[in-house]
Image (cartoon, rainbow, N blue to C red; front, top):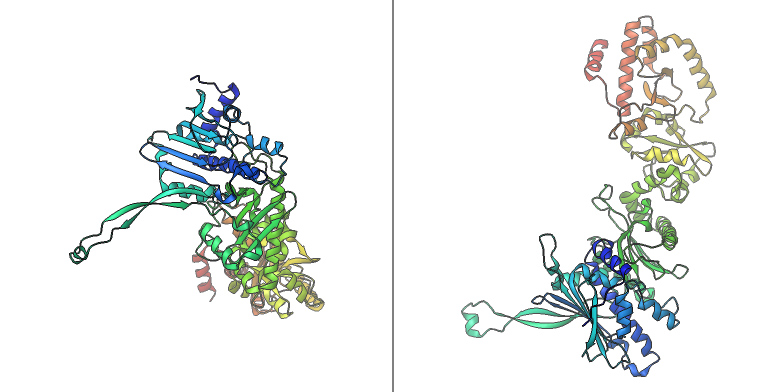
Length: 632
């Protein structure tokens, strides 16, 4: 029998494919099952117009047979089969697709669900097999043929005595090595797992004879003697795939329990999802999607190890387990899947050949997620707040990242802790603002309780104005990106201009500041560069002192940046020490103004006190303690 050679370009492609195109060797089973499904699809299509086929849809199936003794794995279908010429053309020339030709010749529309279009997946078998045999009998042919190959050296085609129409692929697996266990692909458990992962939604049953064991019924004597039961093995035909994907079923057929069960089973979450969406998009590209918002963040969600992405299917066949391009980072918490027939796949089906369709789908999914979150916010506030507690930080990072490019999409989904003791949206805040309030006020700190004690909040609270409490590291950075909301500017409670006009008090403070200019300068000099200046405060009421900042870097931003790895401490806020002219401490300072040494000690004491109020580290605790004792 003459051995035929692959064409030179096919030989190079085969060698490259075996060694590099496919990321995982296990993918071979997905490819061979997809090819078998294509073959059945073709014969099923013919059966709709040709009574001679003699098969109904329920008669079609794919069979898997594993033989550990001979180390062979068989994939058998009763599809359309191949003639000798088709074996030559489809298997002798790599990347020549019989599926694409079939669709063209039979004028099938784009909705016809024939999976393979590249004729290449078959050769993934050589990643695990030292020899591949294909025995096929084409529908309408009197003869069957056998195609055999041991890889790049070529192939043979000969006649065979196969009686039934269809194709049988026999893989003689490679010998196991220290690095590779090819024999695992003969284990029933492993085969079931691969079919469940990649081919669960192939629309024809994938069947296998599975060996089980059961106890042999014991005699009364054996039972009385406490004899251990004996077991016998028996074979049972099992269908290994579910065939009809949940997402392709009519929504009216499904209940909430169906969606929740699918989620916990497929995405290995013990908790039910907080919300789900079943999307059927019939535009271009068309796709179906199931999207889930988990009720809890995964333990590694905010770590580098977490990998976002949706499962990507093409015609029910899993292409990628986590397609990162389908989700923006700020919606990276969403789990689910997308199934589309309109994706352009490359020859390995593991990567997209062109990303135009994917970008359109991703944009549509992004809008769907945003819409579902807005519905949740409007219709079920407690559940949305539960979502916010789990994933709100991610939305804040989304506002901050990319220099605020996504802020318009996300700003109405944000929640902030309020001085009124609840979570509020920006819209709720602005709607509740008194007419005379100019700004959206916010304060930063380690916790709401700490912010409550800040001296800078006192004046604004007395006016009855609400304050947003920013307690996460990213909060103030995000607010800086937002800049304003509905034409209302964000304003830090430590800002010079709070928009609270009290002309009489301002004039009084200004007069006292001019009168005390030398004293304030002497205090600033005594602090030796720790502050840019010391001023009299227009914001303090009962508290003696506070620390504020000038410029873009605030005290809270300085704390965050200083905590980052690799920060050399050069990023500093321009600190300003504010003294309350209405507090008795101001009189003490005035009395000590003629004693420069004592005034300097007072300045350092008040500065350290202000640091403690802000929750910032004290530079020299011993000096602070000694100063208290000395001045007491």
